[in-house]
Amino acid sequence: MSQYFSGFSLRNLRPAVFLCLSVAALCLGDAALALTRAELYQATAPVADRSEAAQTAAFQTAMKIVLVRVTGRRSAEDDSALAPLVDNARRYVQQYRGAQDGQVWVSFDGPAIERWLTQNGQPLWGHERPTTFVWLTAQTGPQSGVVITADDASELKMAIDAAAVLRGVPLLWPSAADVQRNRLDYAGVNGAAPSTLADIGRRLGGEGILIGRAIGTSGAANVRWTHLFQDRGSEYSGALEGVNSAADLYAGLFAASGNLAPIDIEVTGVGDLREYANVQTYLESLTFISHVSVVALTGDTIGFRLATRGGAESLRRTLSLNGRLQSIAAGDNGILRFQLRH
View 1: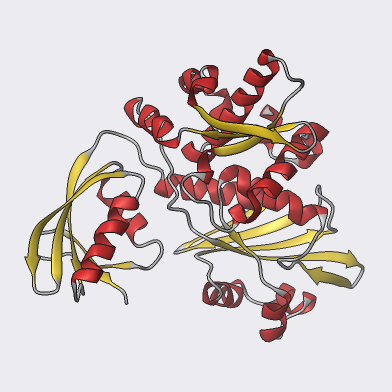
View 2: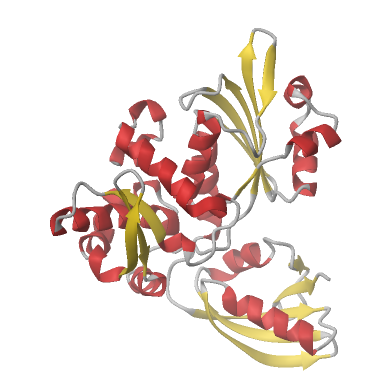
């Protein structure tokens, strides 16, 4: 599988690997739209036969897929620092079962893998991941083409969805109704300014925006991508490079490593006990936060002390990600402050 992880070109994929990715996308269903914390640690891999050696090899392949997803690094499968996890993959298996076409579905012990990664100074990218809205057109004739929508069954979309599952990047595609409602078609999407498409994509639920223009709809189609996220904009070329480069950027921003350290924050706009409980539950759900305690309560503002990895800037980016807590100016004491959005 090393060619996939390093080059990410369908031209270099062995058929079995492409089948593995396709089955993974099918087995996880809507995982590309919303991977849960448990689903991050599930993968499907080919198994040669029913022997213990073949099963062990399949578990190791599945572990490599999981490590690419949860470290955020394309090269994770070849990283010698992660070899102990791969070599001992069987030890972390919680469930497994046969899947179609000679595959095996494997679910690993996520908390145990997370502990190993953090104890060994490796990056950990949790389930706090931006949803990326995809605008993709495909030229099918000299002056004609299509807008790829959520129910499209082309090889290109299947390959993009499979790559997104592999990297753990939640994708959101427009529906045919979305395209019609915004009075868009192939020419309209191709001619629209990126900022216009980004505005529509954000209204439809995207946090990052991928805009692609493809020649044809095969899995190896030539695609030119523009990726917009917050104040960043980048361009890439290649059928899967949009998804993979977006994942690289997100992992660089949201993957955390290092020892636990205390960070104080203030959340304002907390009106009642229910909202307080919701904020605390949300903070406790974040992968890189191991402990949450209340240190101050003044009016509608609550002071929390967090035991977290990654530092203050990583924390600020992640807490602001889904808009539930909006970053506001720090107070005179320099403590990070957030406004609870209702």
